[in-house]
Length: 283
Image (spheres, rainbow, N blue to C red):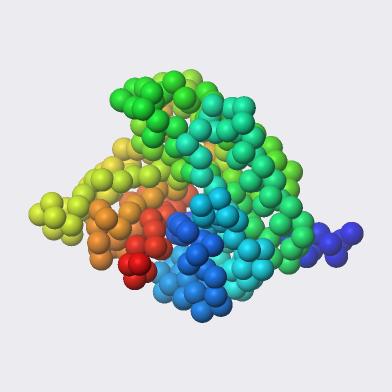
């Protein structure tokens, strides 16, 4: 039994406490089919100081082959890079069949981990986007929040029993909720990734110093907004995500600026980069 748990433990345990440098990887089944493609991802992570990746494990309803998932995890774990299975939904907050579909996907990852104890996913990364539906558009429209939190908790219940972490992408709209709503949200998971997009663009005329200033100011503002006037215990930490279209080749500089600006904030967990796919040749 001791030997089993030693094998089943995440290869990069303890790294959850380090400053996170994350990377989204979309279309995993098609872009990570070969050993060479996995090695290219590994090399990109090492060159860009990435220590965890969020890999979408299905594409057009087709799950990545188990052998390919195992190869990916083994290769990245050898270099102390955590791997989270990225699962998406626009409707899991509605409950019923929509939530059950997502939970079945989580269970599939749990089963994979049981069958591959040496090459396990370290966590589940959720991309649930009810804000994309027409009825949820508009500032201050958070009618979906209770259902979203229920979905988070349902996933967490399954994942943590299987010794996996849970991390969820959120938009800054959620940080504008009242104190009670933010308490409900931020206590539902151990970590969130704030998609801090559209602050800048390569064509906006701002120089690098101005873009850095905007990134620093916005990150501090959103972190303050998230945790203001709510109990400090048992709340998830925040990773801040930036994307390639906003900064182009300057993205690494902006990510570094986040660490410099927020490393002393106990709620700041690190940054995440969207996305690896932007660096690949266009198909």
